[in-house]
Image (tube, rainbow, N blue to C red; front, side, top):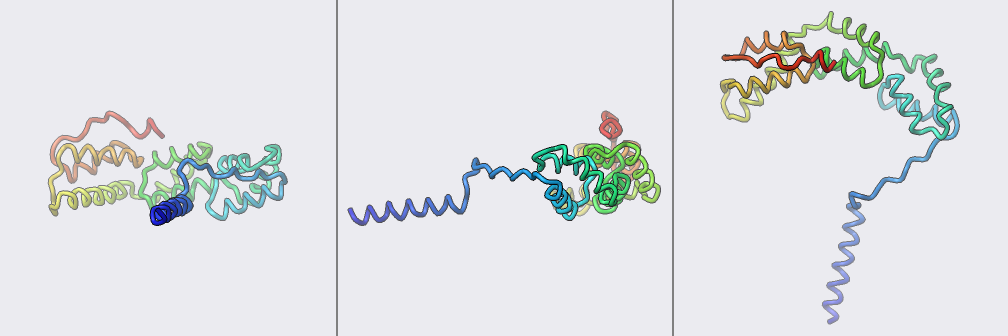
Length: 208
């Protein structure tokens, strides 16, 4: 009886320790304390900007989530703009440049994402015009195609596996999602694909 009781105790103890190491997924994190002064909110804004750049709209949302009194937010936004810590024109240009060079995204995807961040269209248009004037857009498409085709070859185990209609359609959808125009995609697919290309059933301009 003693042995059984000891085993039950150890089992209960191990279960308790397991719960400590692996919190229950339904347990909610405590709500963050609201900030009540301009100084506190300004410091919160500075910390957010140290982590990454923000559009004016994003920063406003961030501060309103943290503020006990939302009337404190506009003066802080004004101060950050005066100090050039917030500049939507610069933000749009840096964002577009980075997403072209690092992520190889097309103009329509970049425009869509900038609009989702609350950047005004005039800054988006200026940024995209400047970045893509200095960018070989078909080369971006070819780079993405090369990478995707290499993945197809790796999965099939063949060095130069043929592109069937299913693969061609997958490449086409991937490039549309990346923000490239249907014309540019089709021109580059013709270089590597044999057979018919997908119909123009959707266009990135519709989602931009």
